[in-house]
Amino acid sequence: RVARGNRVNTLTMTANENEEVKMTMDLNTRTVDHINDLTTTQVFTPRNNVGTNTSLFNFDSNPEALEPFFFSSGLFSIFGHTFAKITNLTLTINNNLQDKRFIGIGNKKIKDAIPAQRTYEVAFTAMITDDRLLTELINDTENTGSSQKITLQFDKLAPAGTVNEQILMEFQDYFLSR
Image (tube, rainbow, N blue to C red; front, side):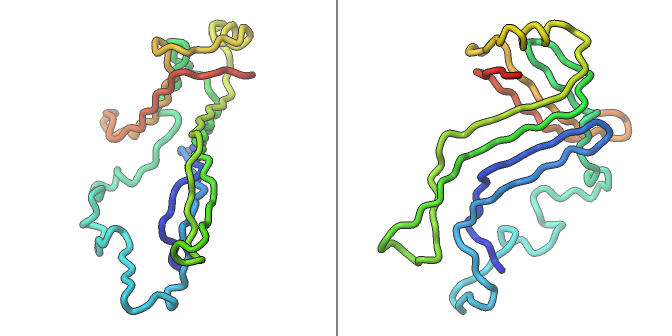
């Protein structure tokens, strides 16, 4: 089967201690065809019409590039402090796509999706060694300014200990719950 017009509805990144960073996605697919159902005028060009792996824009012949991101090589920062004793962390990004089909427009097998409010949720488990985080959580402090951000960073280290690749996300205007 060929799924075309994929849009990410929900993306979840999970980082647990002593494990690689994992990502799952829930896709909203515009249409699904069996490869034999495609007409001779339709052309299926996978991978943006790139035929070989070595021609991909992100191809790297270095075997270290195939190493995964590990949570132990990153950081989690909130309230201006980096917390080192996080045991697991989950980031969920939800685009809240709503399936829509319209009468009289196009093929009845094809659906559209209308995006709603995108939401982000960061949940973590930590050993509290600094009472600042606990105080902020107990007081239900909410940040609606840009001075304090939640920073989530994952690094892929080269053998020399230098950063080879990085995933860096910063969030502001957040609400806390416990």
